[in-house]
Amino acid sequence: MKTLIHTLLLLLVFACSLGVSHAQAVGKNAASRPEEIEWTWEVRPVPVEPKLPNVLLVGDSITRNYFPEVQRQLAGVANVYLFASSTSVGDPRLTHQLDEFAAMENVPFAVVHFNNGMHGWMYSEVEYKNAFPSLLHELQVIAPNAPLIWATITPVKGEKLPGPTNARIDARNSIALTFIAKAGIPVDDQHELMTQHKDQYEDDVHFSPAGASIQGKKVAEFVLASLRKMPSSK
Picture 1 (cartoon, rainbow, N blue to C red):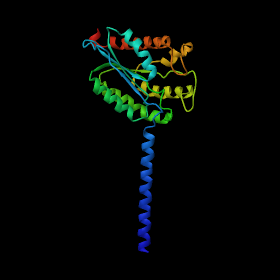
Picture 2: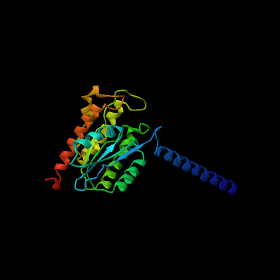
Picture 3: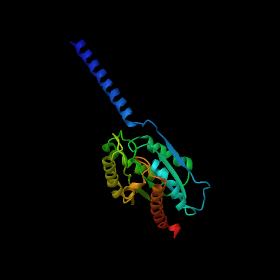
Picture 4: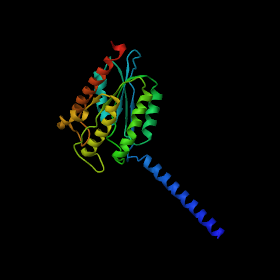
């Protein structure tokens, strides 16, 4: 009888260990779900003007497209840096990438304009919601004295499953805005802006150079408004 009980206990421990290992494996696989092509695109201004404030744009390929217009609008006013990536909120790599970028550039950022949500459609909106605070926290870590500006996710012309779809974009914008409003962060409503320029798509997701220019000018307006509130800019 004792031998039988001992055997059953061993089997139970073995089964539990398998369950834990399986759960850990699933968790590991679920933690990072890369797309077919993953990328980052990091740009620093040349030259960096030490007397000017440093502005950081965080986003994806849409941000990368309007970045040159922001640089033009802020020429002589600020050094504009870019961190663009396909890594989505929900992927633990995102905060590490931002950490590495900030350490590499090693400058204080005066303003951070950010967006995330057009990638990572393998992550549910629940996962997006659960992970969004970690993005806010990370930005506050790498730019502790910088005001943040949130740019809403832009609509798409053509939809794909599991994404992007406009319904999921609307859901993510809504989720983000709950945190953004609570934190008192200004909103650059790029979604509403580009809804008014549906003739400016160059593909299902991205906008033409003229469309990107429209976006960049709006971004620059928000950044300038934030810079003007800085004591050193008075």
